Image (cartoon, rainbow, N blue to C red):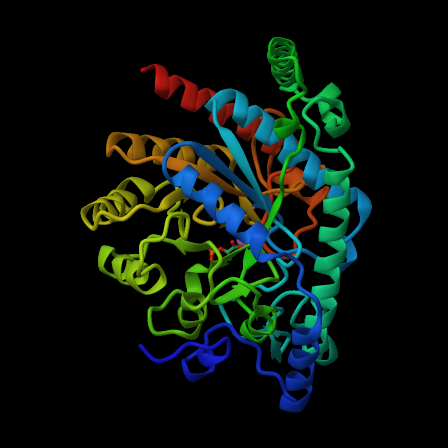
Length: 448
Ligand code: PEP
Ligand code: CO
């Protein structure tokens, strides 16, 4: 294979890239970005890789979640705090139900670029470039907003840095301390139909923690300190190139703009630019796989992206849809088993279950999301494989974007608080309920 550099992807066809009108402005933004200090360190990246390897071996479980796309105007204290709260609550519930340590990875601090089904959008006879996320262009339908602007990469990096800075100081300051789950209470703790179940679980965990600490005579520091890692779809390649760095005392190159980048479904061609970019970085990486993935294609990807079968390197995030998972997932699991490869399997039950309402809203049904999860846990168990993770699009706020859940949100509710410009997210109640149901589901499967 040809020699790799952070820019060697430029020799391959690159899908889903904006057409920047001014190549000098692009080069200037990339150069400026490349000179800035990184957001994460290789130490953190390697620690995550080790933890993902443990998850692949069945000892941990990955919870990955956040917005479909972050917005610059939602880079605010309450939105970030609420997102952390719901992820912490879900991870507490999953620890309880799965009896495993949870790896928390946010779709945040850099989740700004979106793949689109068409390069252009037409309204009333006017054709403009599609909206590709805040890091590329603006959502408004005007030529000015939609023109791709490389300066937005710098804005994206700054917003990612502010987001991560706030998350780090919340976590370091003790916000995520398991001794104080009340810090993460959201309004629904008193209102949700599932509130009591959650409270009972919190009490039971607090009891166990006190019991253990009394026995050991120490405070469980490892539990007190909870880690959060960042992830995003590494879609906009000039940006990813600029945050790819060498570090002292380690070999190779790291993407230091995030801990855990993933390759999207639409850009996973084996000879495409994205796969070329990913093969050269040392980070753990995710690959989104959908119903059109074949065993041959998958094995080729594994060969290119993980030639040395490195533990923790690959997470396969499958998103088949509830109607297709039973048919499409087993051949892929079997192919990976036949090739004697170890990967971490993670189910994204969101992206294969998107539908559009008669009123033109993109939505997802709670029951379909749950059904894909349930089928996929069972498929893995039947084949002697381990589903070691889940991937959600969620919000810590009371949005109304997905239908269903204990409160029975219906199509007419969607207009009330629909905020996503792209995919619909579970709201905080739906997300917590999902975690409770996963815990129950896995506990039941283990006892069968
Ligand atoms: C996403 O995760 O927002 C996304 C676009 O996913 P996929 O590549 O699986 O369609
Ligand atoms: Co999405």
